[in-house]
Image (cartoon, rainbow, N blue to C red; front, side, top):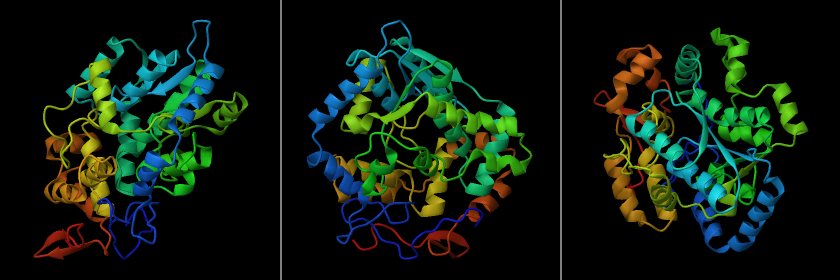
Length: 383
């Protein structure tokens, strides 16, 4: 395996949702309940949300400007979550957000339409589109070495907003949810409002710095477009630029964010469900989205449907039994709709694609039956 993940060799599934212990950094307690489910319980009964909102009001009062300048950067694609955050900040808390969009690898029609609708609903936006040649090189390298073609996009998505904040002298950057605790990180991070640099690199970049791609012949000055250089980090510290999670201040509910975005930002869901899952309203922007989730299924035995269904169980929208049925039907579905686009973008053929994919199948998760790869464990096995 090109990228080594330290995974438990004994596969266990959460007794409350459908996630397994193969998800990186997730923990299970003595009752067999995952940390994401425990955090969901914490959101329901362990947090004073009125007090949290008072904290948000105080934070906005500290950074709000009255000189006509932007006072907060919101990283946003025109998707449901960033729409919700930006709209709330400007309309409920009187902030003046600048929304920064890092362009997808290849825009989908619905993704581009939603970004336009969002801007037209009343927002200033900077769309940053990276050097196409470099982005393709990085994407191919990340696919081969990490089994995640989305890594270069993530570099840009999480570093570009800070570059803009530096350029516009903005001290506050607001992301949506803290995915590390929402989806299964350690509970000792359950009540953090922001993210330090070391955790930022570990949680957002899988502990991989952009500079590690230099061995592929990509110039250092080009690599810096995807990450924060030391000089920029010093500037961020000197200018006291702060990154906060909106989910710390408001209970995070993806489906509710969707409804809010439809009502206030003219957001539209996909006319058909996303491959690999049952949902229609998340991760719609990029034709390469499906391969990020499919590679997670290959590496961890956890596909897009598992992640979506687990969150809906935690949100009280479906039962565990319903989630299992959805996982059984959709998880691991191959994203064939844009397969040719993916191959062309990375400059590879189907045989090379298959060889790379197989390189990331862990022996304890996968085996061959009649010459075909088969996942050894399923959440429904004990039902």
